[in-house]
Length: 315
Image (cartoon, rainbow, N blue to C red; front, top):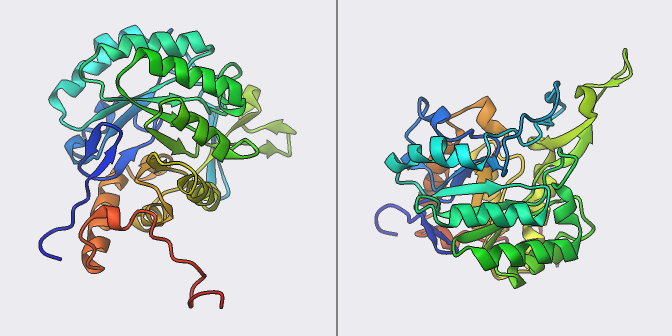
């Protein structure tokens, strides 16, 4: 290998300089992190999920730490599409990094209207359809757990946008591969997985949920990483479009596992709250791994899992 390794990757029509991006809901609207690092270092930036109307989110408590993880019930709090376009989107005029906007809604029509509004925004490079949020009462996982609803939603959004379209899949289904296949058939250029698992935490003295009135939330963090890794491998072996892996990534080593399993890119979520510079550390760690192992391009690493466990084959 001569020179530095090539970390670039193609997701739909996007060419990313590296495979690392923050997960929606953990990166605000981007500008909140500018005090910590240069956003131009990222492969892509993903802002929090946007809905048609502003949302104040769920009642407190909205989050709680649990063993090896984090339970969140934010409720898709956001400023709504009009304020996002007017007040938040202009910030990215000074940022070269590709921008991915996460979309959420309570009906298929809402997703379609959001896609139509953003399709004419030149600074928006891709859309991620959040059809798998586990902490909203309307929409959310409903769209990602019914094959026919998923098919209609992805098809209708594809009809109104020429942006790169990513579908964020729910792990709360019998077979996630079915939904990945539907997404590909209906025009998605990538799938991202996994979103949080539904979970609870109970205070035994009061016999009440630690998440207050919301009772349940989305489980994220290291606790879900082995399951996320397993599902990424399943989907990689099923579809021909890129897989974006997420779920419990807190180090370069974690990210490299996802790449070896078949992820073309990765998203970092919960650990952004622990270390706001984690994305840069993961980028540097991936580059160091490729250099040390004399791997010239990231594509050589993606999906390179060898058969058999440590020590060789099963024979």
